[in-house]
Structure formats: structure tokens, C-alpha cells
Length: 495
Ligand code: NAD
Image 1 (tube, helix red, strand yellow):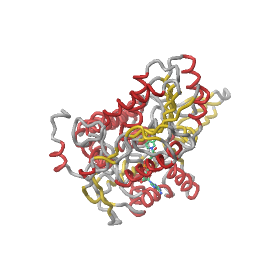
Image 2 (cartoon, protein in one colour; image 1 turned 90 degrees about the vertical axis):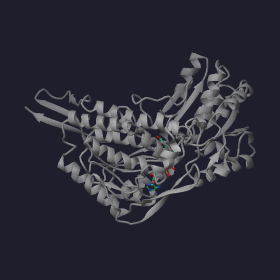
Image 3 (cartoon, helix red, strand yellow; image 1 turned 30 degrees about the horizontal axis):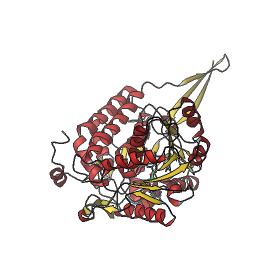
Image 4 (spheres, helix red, strand yellow; image 1 turned 90 degrees about the horizontal axis):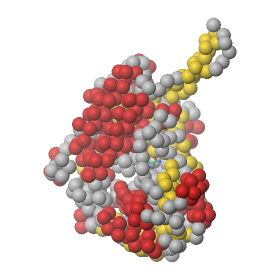
């Protein structure tokens, strides 16, 4: 089906949602301000989108609070909430073509990835939490005989979900699933680069039966709409995914306002460690290449630091360079493209700036290093690998968020682990080894919320995802994510 659709033709006629979705409908913004949305595949202006300000955010929060207090969702029977969320997931799949197209137009990712990956994983996430609604129980505490003590989880009230642009639908779903399943109302603020699918989600949720006000969507700029949510006195929790820099702001906003709960899924500089005893360099090379070039490297857990043992480095590099060829940037609306554009011109310039810094600090470019497809007007960079990188260089320390791999050569297991952990981040890490002993030693040694052994970027809704250190705290996915959106209450009944 993917191959049979003329995506360019569809792109000309698709409706681009560009107004806030509040209280069950699209409304005009109070601010009357707008920001431009550009298709990064060719640099053309798509539309202007409403830029919500404090008044718009306040309107959305009031709507969410009213819905919460009325109990239309928060007190609805779990089995009915489950049915509505399952219907929401079905509608996401039923609108797969349109959602995939909106995502590709917003962020320039290959249509095949949006169609087969992003839409499906968002629907799967919503369905997974729907199924959990009536399968999670409270506790009875072991207290005195003349007492019955129940320990229950209650929804917090109004949850703000502030999300990034790299996987707009999945990141929104990772917040919406557990926050809605636990009975909260949500105000979703998509990144300014990617508002379309979030707005469409608001519409689909209401079509599925979610009462108006339970999910409001406010497109807007971070320092205006995002900040307004962070500082709002009637927002009980912010589920945030984005950069470490902005994550720190949210902690400050919380302290300056109402001590709202904050969950932070932040940046990373994840190590891909290939040990001398790796017995499948082909698999390692494929994992390393996909780990940094998929989604144009705009992935929070991208394996952006290759830490490779001297003994296998030459053989490995040859194989990675061969793998990189399949990530040649192409037209995002072509169903066969594996690597699209970067999200904006600004992001492309930022990545090119890091490539310049790598060269200036003495690293060697093994492949790539340039902007490509300039004639299209889009924002493309070819897969780039730097060799002879030291872990104190800028390209080894800072999150580039582009298709740029920094390769650091080490000698032996201990040095590999030391370099892997010498970072402010701790989102993820991987080790490639043929030794069971080293697999276990490395899995314990790597300080990160996710460690992959002989694989990379594997995931399931059943396993938690999130970081150590400055990669944040709190977890998305799995039942653990529901903790973020609930408070524990102990209820004591004397007999
Ligand atoms: P960002 O931090 O710039 O923006 C994220 C969100 O915060 C956006 O909605 C933005 O509008 C908002 N925002 C920006 N400035 C703000 C401010 N001053 N106050 C309040 N809100 C503000 O991040 P990005 O560029 O959209 O996304 C890339 C970052 O996201 C990377 O660092 C990446 O590692 C991270 N990320 C992390 C995960 C994870 O699960 N750990 C997943 C995806 C992306």
C-alpha cells in the first residue's frame, strides 16, 4: 500500500491542522500570533500555525481542569475508559496514511518510516495502556489487625505533555497513554517544528469518545507556550521529553510555581562499545550504522560514540562504511528512501557546525561531512564518520542530533567502560561481544537506563525507557510510566 500511493500528489491536498484544539474542537487562538511551518524536504512554506500564548494555555488548562473535576473521564468506569482508548488507537491506524504524511511534511523523515514505524508504534502505545487500565491493582498493606489499610494510586489532575520533534507521534503517545489511562486530563504541547500530528490526535481522541477537555493541544513556541505550562499554578505535572537544557528550565519552573511533578526524558551521547572479542562484526557494523544514521541521527538514544577496540577497528570501519551507503539521503516522500532531511535549516546548520568543530579539533573524516541535495532546497547531510576522536573533543561530549558518528579507539575492556561512562549523559549504551562474561560485566558497568547487548535500539512497550544522570529521571513506557502520573494514597480504616 505504501508503494502504491502517490505521496507527492497527496501532499498537495492534505489538510494541515494549524489551530489549537481546546474543549473538543479547533478554536482560534487568543494570541492571533502565528509561526511558519516549513517542509524540510524542499524548504517551502507549508502554512502558518497558531502560536499559543499564556492566555491560550490558560484556556486549555481550565478546560482540562473542568473536565477532570467533572469526573467525565477521571471517574468513568475503567472498562469504558479502556474501550475509548482502544478506539483511539484504532482511529490512529485508520488514519495511518494522513498521519504519516503530516509527520513527513513536518519533519522530513522518510514516508516509509512514518507509515510503518511512527504511526504504528503510537497506536500500539495507546492500545497497550488502554489494556492496562483494568489490570493494574492497588495494595492492602500489612497493618494492625483492627485496621484495613488500602494503598491506592490516584490521578494527579492536569498533566502537561511537552514533547520534541524527532518522533512527534511516539513521544506524544508515550505521555498520553499512561497519563490518560490513569484518569488525568492532558494539555499536549508539540514542538513548534511538528504540530500537525499532535493536533490531529486531539481530533481523533474526541472522535473515539474521549470527553471534550480531557485532551487539549496547544501548538506554540517553547519559551512562550512551553514556559506558560511549566509555570502554570494549576498544572499538576509536566511530562517532558526534549533537551537537557530545557529540562533544567522545567525544574526551575516547578520551583518557581507549585512544585508540580516533573518527568524528564532528556538528551544522550550513547556509547556503542565493540570489544575485541566481538564475534559478529557484520551485525555490529549494521547496528552501529543504523544506531547513528536512522532518523538522520535525530534520536535521543543515538549511538553517537563508537568505542572500538584497536584489534577490530579497521575491519569494523570497513563494514560500517559499507552499511552507511544504504543511508544515502533521498526524497522523504519517496517510499524507498531510508534517510530523509534534517528537521530544519537551523538544525542542519547546527550539525554542520559540529562537523567543522570535529575537523578543527583534529578528528579525521572517514566518510561524509557535507550538506547534500542542495538543489532541492531541503536540509540534507550525508552520513558522516569521524575517526581518531578523543573523548574530550566537542563532538564526543555534546549531543549533535545529526548523522555524525564519533569513533574512539581503546585498548581492552576497562578502558572501554571508562570512556563509555565518561559523559554527563546516561540514556543508553550498547556492547558487542562474543563473551558471556564480558556481556554481563558490561551490562552492569555501563551507567545508563537502557543497555543493549549484541543489539541496538530494541524496544517494547513492556520495557521502561529513560535515563540516568543528566539524561533525566522518571520512565516512559511499561507500567512504570503510570507512576509518574499518579500519587500514592494510604487509606486507613479502623474496625
Ligand atoms: P527542545 O528541548 O528544544 O524542545 C522540546 C520541547 O520543549 C518543545 O516542545 C519545545 O517547544 C519546548 N521548549 C523549548 N524551549 C522551552 C522553554 N524555554 N520553556 C519551555 N518549553 C520549551 O528539544 P528538541 O530540539 O525539540 O528535541 C531534541 C531533544 O530531545 C534532544 O536533546 C533529544 O535527545 C531529546 N529527546 C529525548 C528523548 C528521550 O526519551 N530521552 C526522546 C526524544 C528526544
